Length: 119
Length: 128
Image: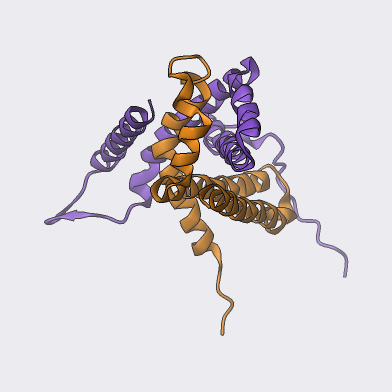
């Protein structure tokens, strides 16, 4: 049997992550990185109580898992290819192993932490 | 047999040769800041699972001037990623036929932006 490429799997994760991050990241960064720190929202909007009930809920937890893990897979694909483009010629396989490995660890980590918050 | 001595065109600084290459690097470079933000979110979730005190430390980091500055850069990268992502979307979308004509590129790009605006408004209204 011919050796089949694993590229479709990683490209699908890259594409899905690209769509999800394009849709939600500007709003999320605006919320957590600028609006709340600059005092434009109420103090409790990002408070422990509100955030644990959101992250611990089924919908909130799933949303966070999808956004964080797919964003990792999206960025991993681009970083690996860009590193290669910058002249690490024999290294695309190595860069892919490092970047996809990191995305895999990030995905597992996100799942474990969300389960710890929920239970 | 001696080793081949094929001419290899030098590639150093290739991205400076054409403005399109620079735009490409800028687009791909957004992924570093996008990944950084995912790490910051995951750090926050990890702190959340560890208890109120560690979550307070994460919130204190968010409120620091350094973090606000960093998030300004991340926001610019995220917005540029959104802009470029939907610009190239027609090239990655299978042709959608309307009768005998395919859906125009502008409809796919515009649909993407419209969906992003709706999703962003929902997130902002629910979270605020």
